[in-house]
Length: 131
Image (cartoon, rainbow, N blue to C red; front, side):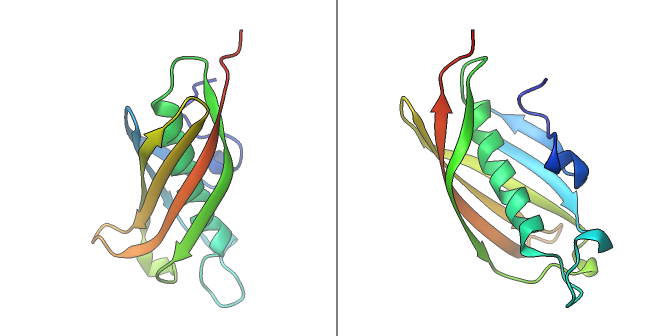
């Protein structure tokens, strides 16, 4: 499996990796009626998944082959409600720093016009390489 390609829940939600460099990724996703809550806006878990995935993939992209990381903690801030008018959203993830066993990353969730819908900071555990 490609370590940087969305899979599982992100694949189910239609989230795609569109840009990746070492320590930096851009994911895209569009809220569909399947993720709307009773208020007609996207459930916060949709935004949180985009943000957490952007942080995790940004960290993974900065690791040696066969290494991986898992989220220890993520803090999400919601800045605006995601409605159908939001269109395709971009989750932009960056690594802030890496230690031997911990990565720190941040992400922001924006629309095509740069409107901020959410932001996150994340602490991730760097697992040893699998042999």
